[in-house]
Image 1 (cartoon, rainbow over the protein chains, first blue to last red):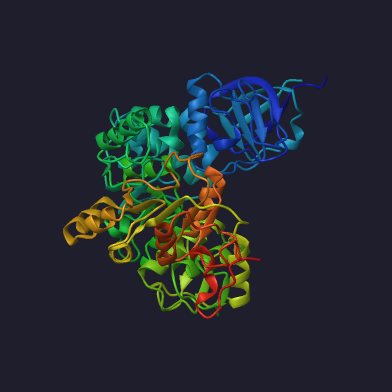
Image 2: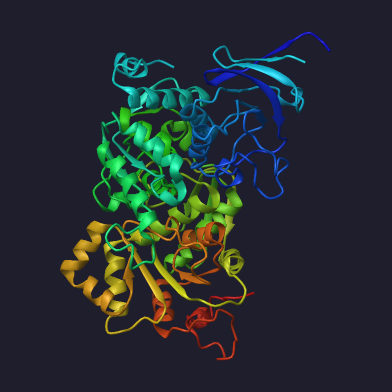
Length: 134
Length: 423
């Protein structure tokens, strides 16, 4: 394995976290697309359908869908089922607001294709940097 | 982003927890969209009110913000999940109503006016030309930008609340001149006779253009009700927040080079696409967006002396219904057996699974009935909706059914055969 690699991005919501990447090639709608009690993706046909986002470093291109999705992220955080961090190519309003009100570290403008599924990463959203640990 | 001293104080938490959280949201959005500063807003319209959409989490967030958050500008509310006075008659249970009341109480503690309507501009939140706003509720956003010439982005519930608690919104998007220019000229040639024609026009535009800003030629005769319908529909189907309407929009607009003609054929095609297959109608809903006073008067005239046989909901902002009380409209409408569902609407009320088929005069209601409640829906003008309500049993929606096309929903062609109602 190579040495730790740093990917610089832009801070959306501050905070730090470490965890394993759960990567989605498709945008995610948190309202209706993720069960707000369990954190399991429930949008039919979604690449992550049936997978839990709880505790993972959730990596996806961008958000979509209703603005109520911000509240879904908040609800997941209250239940301890939120992602440990969110990494986006281009963050939009729903995810940005959701991450802020839920206290989930969030960085965007990242080359998310370079983040392999299940890779261990350290997210420092205070500095806007993701470090790939393996 | 440049912040004023007052804004920096809020961000530092010197004005309390809710103001700080709100500034964090606004600053983050400002950074994402490259805003240089925050603007002071004249008023706020807040969506994310129905407990059906918010859930326990949304309610917890609002209660947390209400511990010390206070609205700094005029702030009004979108519809809730219940009519706060008559939810039991509408079949909404006490448990849901209790949670909905907690939502409204939290907004109340923050000094947000519980107007519970998607038409704030009809009940006293009426911006002037050029005024800066932070509004959610896509239909009202489009109306404010397009008809009134005010300036607002499409806010989500949390960002609108943040604007209310700080009096600020980031300067980006539709606050900037360059983002308000029309991108395509649309010559509308179809006949525009009633609110459903404008709803169909909005759907046709939304489907073709997405959120691109059109300049519409040929809609200069649209009245309040037509504009309300058009704005709701184009926002629903296209995500459009601004439509320049020649002869209506007070803001000057350069004529774009790209040109599109929307004629009768295109509008009829869109109308046909909105039409579901055969099915049963057991639910009638009018007032999406909430009825104007003029529409409320028409509903009373059309139901005068009649009796509805289908469940019929009339959605109107509470203050206008109170005028209807005085004018005698309420008595007429209720004597016909129709129910008022103020403070709410079928988009946000918890009605999933309760009905088999809807007839409505609103293209927006049709869209959400299908998408959110999986309820087949037919688009018909107000008069036909209410006639179907009274004919009852009614309205099977296929044409040429066993009664040979006599039914209300089958009469789309009666105005000179201009409208083909099924494919």
